[in-house]
Length: 364
Image (cartoon, rainbow, N blue to C red; front, side, top):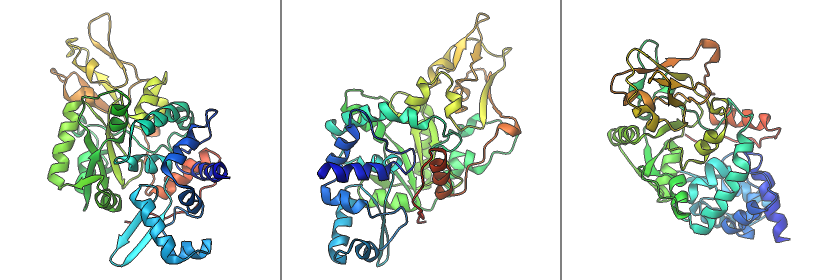
């Protein structure tokens, strides 16, 4: 009976985002058993991604409203759902496993969960990401200083402009680097690099997972991310609720992409790198910066870009000592404009995966 409620929850989570499919090993059930009590799993089956007051959920489950509110608060504090608070109004909603429950385990991630997550993500993430393009959770945008202003840069392609637009910004440790550290892979890249904005930022701060930062500090963090060679990946909407700065050794998404023979097939990006062979000295600085192994030194001792592997991040551009590498905007027919809101993106993802998405709304 206990296994049944967790299997039902797994199937519900599989409707969201990149999904939460079953595996041959059953590790997904062990993950849910570690995170949710049976009572928490049961009430999760009655949540939608639409934010609701506890009274509505209590009425639907035929339970006492105060008891339901207390249970939902406990789950919120464990990062198992989303809680929205304004003045005296509190609402709750379901969240995907990724991005959602997994990322909210920053404070509770331990070696056991890290090992289970590693096995699960390796088994299913790449398979579930295949075929979703362009409806992916994250997209790659270029380093601000790597784009030559020959074309206007959309604000949703500019990490600094994304930050400047925000009224509330929180920064948190990267869950991927935390998880990797617990299984013995110590990453030397900065950890406090993941941004959340608006209501998501408030939630990170409320749960003690992140801290509020000013626009100026956020921009300084972005500068450090560039220096460290991290790939900037905002959520794949016009006005993202968050933005990651990722390395190819730890990030679950980038690790999947890196293993693909043609990473460009799994990435949403409007740019690609190009080399001025007359200026390139073959110094190999760019080889170390590229997270995808897209750059080699050819027989003529100049850098060559494998466009099947280039994801247009611009990390190779900003450290080239002779300014021999530049980012080019893709032809108009190959460019992508992200959806305006998360609901549209999630609907697209559900459609591509053959799922029926439970309707939801996102708070500002």
